[in-house]
Image 1 (cartoon, rainbow, N blue to C red):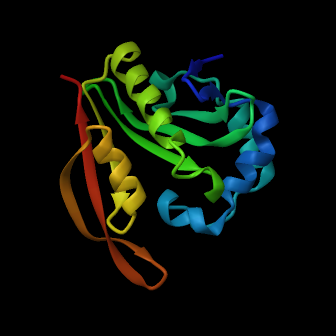
Image 2: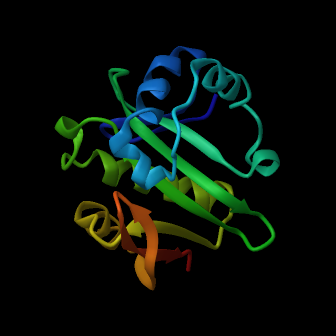
Image 3: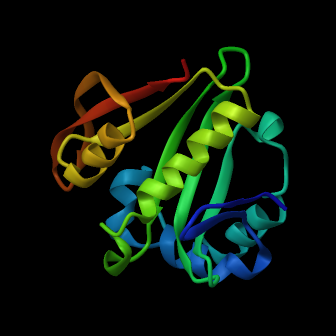
Length: 174
């Protein structure tokens, strides 16, 4: 099992016991706008996903990890997606599940750990993140961690009856 430990959090592989947590997050309407989801996930579909979560990133082109406190409390999820080993890049996405855990440094530590893993272990050249232009917290987080805004995608996402811009951030491993 992959386990990355920071000072306050652990990034670990998904386990079958995470089914209820994953079910609640994937079916939270407020998360759908950042995940691109438009329909609810059935519990059995997520169970199948968890049964295959052990598959290698080189095979499935994605790695999803659970963010937990050092005491084991589930705090959120962090992903590498669109993994491209030829060009040595991947997208990075993060979700802290509850408002009470946001703005406490959890996201910062999780992104730092995953960046270190991506650059040092997977030998990636770059990571990118797609962030809604109105998501001030995420913009602040990625800028603080050395990601640079590389682009603006105008009217990129249609959310709640209106188009919204999306920003592209990149971090190059130099």
